[in-house]
Image (cartoon, rainbow, N blue to C red; front, top):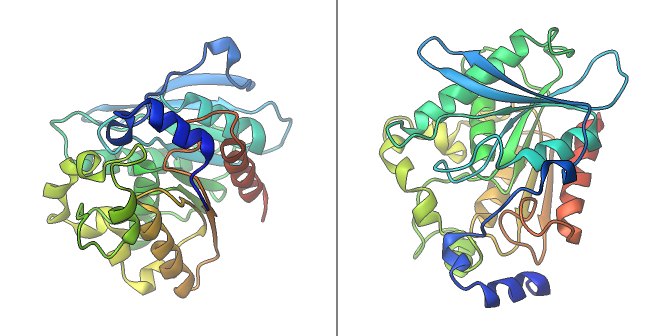
Length: 299
């Protein structure tokens, strides 16, 4: 399918955005999706603090299902505010209480610090599920791009450590393979689309390289053993046709399916990486949130 016309038109008018990315600005607070309550809190991690933001839906229920959300940003940018609208929409449409995690991005920290924060925050949510109005057996993890990587790595490590069990995972156009090769890559989508439609993986992944040698499975879920993958929770994966990460996301979906995991894979034809963050009001933007909400609500 051809690239959506409005996307092509945008890049014709904003050539630098092809490799540097599409700048994003939140609308004014009064124009953002409405939820019952938004609360900023801190998780005490002993050596440091992890900021979180809790979104409560306007639903009268006995228990809230809980969604631990990890923002995107190539492991080098993003925060609670950058994905505030996304979290509000997910909360509003699904009825989940969303807990957004502001994991460490400081250049002095390796990606292991981001993972540790996400893992610790997920454990905290499960331990404090009752206080949050939820139940420990009804906790979901997810996120877009780098956040999708962190979510699935949290799920993998929870199995390896026999620490906790997650209900579902949601991976929106996730980073799966941190090898930044473009030419000669096994993923055709990288050769075709890298640096053309808002994503240059050689830039956004650069600070991961030193960490892969330390423990590759932390950031490269494709390398995980089938026995471990078979224990992964029910999974939703989005890919976009013109995203350089498309092929690896779909390969991961295949691997999970082959391991016996219940996987729903949706490719957004004509779309690009970050379509649920950019181009608000476009058909794919709202379709992404609608499908995600249906997946969250369903059994």
